[in-house]
Length: 387
Ligand code: APR
Image: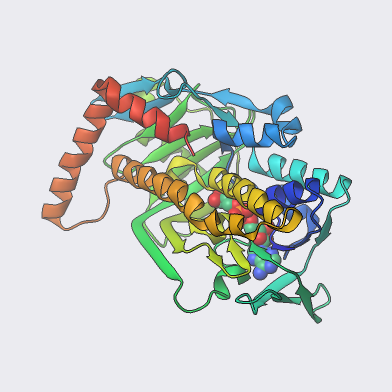
């Protein structure tokens, strides 16, 4: 079994296969430290925590994870809070920085004797339509190489070799939401005891705790904005403005230690299986960060594939693999639908004047329903935390 990529998808899959006694090797383009230090998401759904717990992968999470269960929406009509931990299925998020989770998964896999080839870039997957697929790679010293296996799991993200090697006929659904975020990591304590969503005529602003010392902020910006375009002073002043700090209290400032511009994009590939090649995580579907679903879908899909591969390879039941794609697509499309709904709630999106006025009317109706309808609040909580 060859697994491409050592992110959440690849490392959960690798750990589960190794526990089932299935030989696998992970080919990872970057180095060990890059994998361990890549700050990405951090909001784990309750189901993700259950998956990690039942597979014995939750040690770090249990020690350092923080429960989060409240959202605060700030709008021109005032603010309101949703204690989503007490709504829907009554589930909180667990905040645990993704690079910590990946470091745990990496350590667990290597300690158990797992094999990872760092600085080994997969170039393409070959002969996936038969039982002897292979992966051509660029080794650390630049030499070409080739790895053969019975199956290949592409956990190498949106730009990886898995997507590049799909046969004709693979369907690619995609949507550019026309919105970009300036994603910021600040060395500053959280300013709210909640996930903050600020809806402002100047654009969306978001606040998500990462730890007691680190806070993630988002600022909607024009597509094409450079990450270094804004001074720190302008960033904090704009965050204060959009989060209505004069009404609700100043934000706790600190150095901005990491910046990225994220274009809110979504896509889904169908099917997720092509013969001996399986797509997992971002390689299977990219979801906008508006609802913090990406890493949770990656972990869910990795467990589904690990179970199917174990049945096929350890119990001689290849039919289990036939269900992988459809079983994951149901969850992917449900998450995409909610993420799309969130984008419509949080952002004024560029439209023609008429369409813009109509869309703004819809947006205000959504906000009012979320503020006043218990049914809508239960629906929100169930989808916000669910995967
Ligand atoms: N060959 C080998 N490794 C590769 C290649 C390649 N050609 N291309 C990418 N990779 C590696 C990357 O270096 C990275 O370590 O694949 C890994 C992909 O990891 P992620 O991008 O984290 O994707 P995934 O595991 O699917 O997790 C998806 O987690 O990163 C968060 O929220 C984010 O939605 C995303 C979710």
